[in-house]
Every structure is written in structure tokens, then in C-alpha cells.
Picture 1: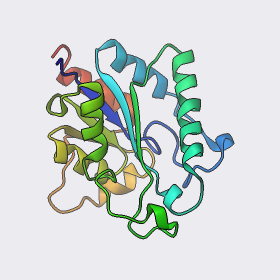
Picture 2: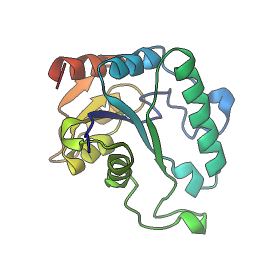
Picture 3: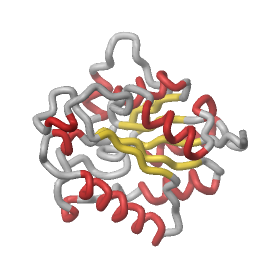
Length: 192
């Protein structure tokens, strides 16, 4: 089976503006560079996969159909501009969830590797040739957990996170935003 390179993107604060718990579509805002970043990755042969903790489901702020509605909306915007997101994965769980059915330990909640492992199986991805981009050190830890390279962006919570790294956790790169991160990725692995 062919194994593909991928860039795993966090959703809130990385691909779209961070608004706390996104609970209405009218609050959804793509960063102005997000679609260009996705298209650059598409052209370079990377699979683009979104991996997102969605604890708002477990907290009862919104339901799973709403998470899927947000995905469809973002997908439509990206496709209308000539880009493609190859996969969407989210974790609705939280260990302290007030909604009982989502209160559970799981392998999909970042920084655990479940979402990437599922994408690896579904899409034929080689994590060792891949990158994880996000605005939290959880995203960098996720990259380390699967043998990928982790990039922290300063959008969303990233500028604050950058000032307080957890012990023993370092990003391969810190970038101002997603398109800067993509530029760095393309310089690292232009054709591999």
C-alpha cells in the first residue's frame, strides 16, 4: 500500500479563528490565509487532515451533528476555492464530561494518537513523513506520539502557549500562522 505524507491541522485557532466553544455557524471565521495554505499543501502532494478535540460535545454546548455541520461548511468553502481537505477526525470525549455518554478515557483525545492512527489506516498515511500543526502544545505532543514533526502556530492560543512550554516538549518550528507553517514544511520536504 502506498503511504502518503500528510499535514494534520488543528481546527480552532489554527485553521479557523478561536472563539471559545464554536456553537453557531455565524461565529465561524476562516483565517484569511487558511485556504491558500490548504491549496499549497494539496499541490505539494500532502494529504490534509483536520484533527480536533471537540469537548464542547461532552460538555453539552453542542452536539455531534453540529460538529459535522461545521466540517461541511469549512469543506464547502475550501472546495469552492479549489482546495481539498482529505479527512476530518474529532474527539467528542472528555474525562470530566457532564454528558455521561462522553465521559470516558479514550485514545482519540489529543495528545493521544487515536485520530492520527485512524487516519493512517483510512488514508494510507505515513506519520513519520508527516507534520502536525496547531496552536497548543497538545498538538506538538500528538506529533511526538506518532513520530511526526510538530509545529506550533502563534494564532489562537499559540502566542500564550509559546511562553509556557511543558517540560520536555519542544516544537520543531514556531510559526506566526498556518501559511507560515506551510512555507516552512515545504522548505523541509519539497519533494519527498
